[in-house]
Length: 363
Image 1 (spheres, rainbow, N blue to C red):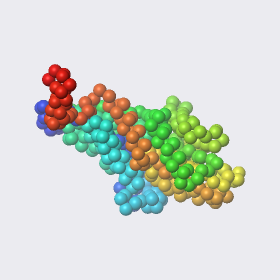
Image 2 (tube, rainbow, N blue to C red):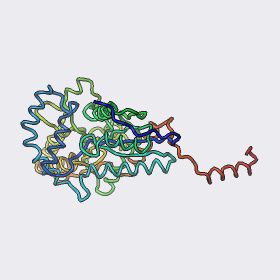
Image 3 (cartoon, helix red, strand yellow):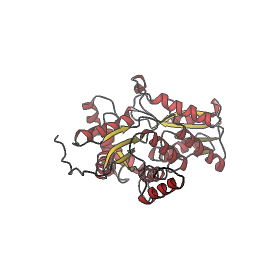
Image 4 (spheres, one colour):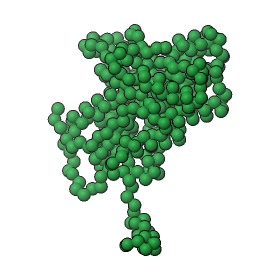
C-alpha cells in the first residue's frame, strides 16, 4: 500500500502533544444492520478469536452474522440513550474531562478518543491529532488489565495506521494500570459512595470480562491482573476474603473460559441462601452493554429468579472525579519529558520579571 501524501511541513510551528484514549467500540445504532457492520469488524479481528482463520471466517460470515445481529440489536436497544450508546457517551466525556484536568495542572495536551471497532476509528483520530499539529502522541487504552484481545489489538490498529503514514509522530503506549493506586482509589470510592446511599450487602461480586482459558496458558497476564486488581480493591475496602468474590462474564462459544462464570455463580449464591448481592465490574471503565444489559438486567433476573431478594449493580467509573484525576496522573507520568507544560503568556513573563527585580534578582 502506498504511503499517504502529507501536508506541507510548517516550519517554526510550536510542537504539540496529543493523547488518544481508546475504548473497545460500539455500533452506530441499535439496529441489525449496524450490529452486522460492528460485529464483522470486532469478531473478524484475529486477536479476538484465535482459531484457524479460514474456518472462523466461514463460521462468522456463514452463521454468526446471519443470526446474532438481530439478537444483539435488541439488547443494545434496551440500554440505548437519547445521546446514543452509553459507551460512546461516557468515553467522549472522559476525553473532554481529561483534557480539562490536564490543562488545570498546567499541561497543554490535545486529547481525543477513538474506538477500536466502530467510529471514531483509531486511524481517523490519529490523523486528526496530526492535523492538530501533534508530533508526539500517547496512546492510552481504557483497559486497566492487559489482554492480547484488547490492549494488543489497539496497538495493532496504531501500527497499521503507522504503516500507511509517511511522517510519523513519536509514539508511546500505556500497557496496563491494573494496580495503579489512583485507579484502585477511584474504584473504592465508587463502591463506598454506593454503599453510603444503598447500604451494603454481605457479598461483593467483582465481575471481569472473560477470555478463553487457553490464553492464560499461552502467557496472557489478564487473569492474574484481574485478581490483583480485586485483591488491592478488597484491601482498600477492608474486606475479608469471604466478603468478596471474583467472577468472569461474557462467555462466547463452547470453549472453556476463565472461571468461575458470573451468572452461574450468582445463581449458586442465591440458592445457598444469600438474599442480597452487590456487583461491580472493575475492568470496565465505562458502562456499556456488558454492564448495563448483561449484569444489571440479565444477571439481576437470574439472581432473583434463583431466590435472591435484592441485587445492587454498582455503576462503572464513567465521569467520576476520582477516576478522571487518576487518568490525569497516569497520563502525566507517561508524558514525562515531552513539551506539555503550558508556556506563560507575555503578561505573566513580565510580572515574573517585575517580581524578580523587586527581590533584587538579576533582570
